[in-house]
Length: 238
Image 1 (cartoon, rainbow, N blue to C red):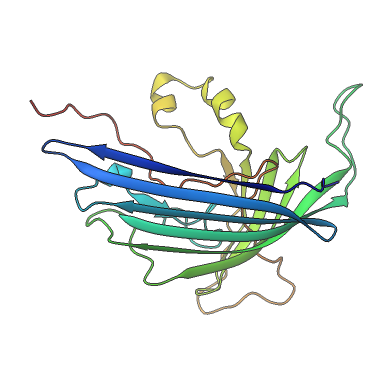
Image 2 (cartoon, rainbow, N blue to C red):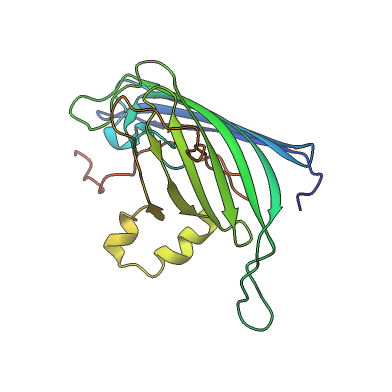
């Protein structure tokens, strides 16, 4: 079960480059985990800002798993972004699957109903992600299993009524999996995800029997960085 533990953390990152390609970039994130009834309440926040000269590959992106489940993956982005997330986490009994003589998947899973909202502006022309056009709220339900290493979420956009069911592995596994990839794949790692993405037809809201949408959480909660993947390295001008 969940332990009665309160944690509070955060970080601020500043980044700058000078010369002809000079730019500035700043991010701040924080999270608070506290007991709440039979479970825990997790609050997370992220904010990012970049100067007008910010390179496109250092822009901020939101949408889909890890940020706004229920919205298209990496649909929104720009030089400015903000993301807020709140979820209530609690354990429920679940049949254990034996893994050899001395291990199993555990006798419980963690459920986490959540709400989240994101916002971006000052998008880059010619890139696939655009500004959010205001706040984009989502709601959903997540399930974490196998010692909270695997997370499946169901999320719905509260603006478009479209749903998504992405799955993800805990970020701690990323380095292990990427070590098995080629140098090219390590430089541009694929998302560690399995997507089942059922979307409701346009103008058709989910029925009352639809599984509620969900967001992303981790056993040791982590604030995802809404940052676009870096582009291949470029040679600096003389």
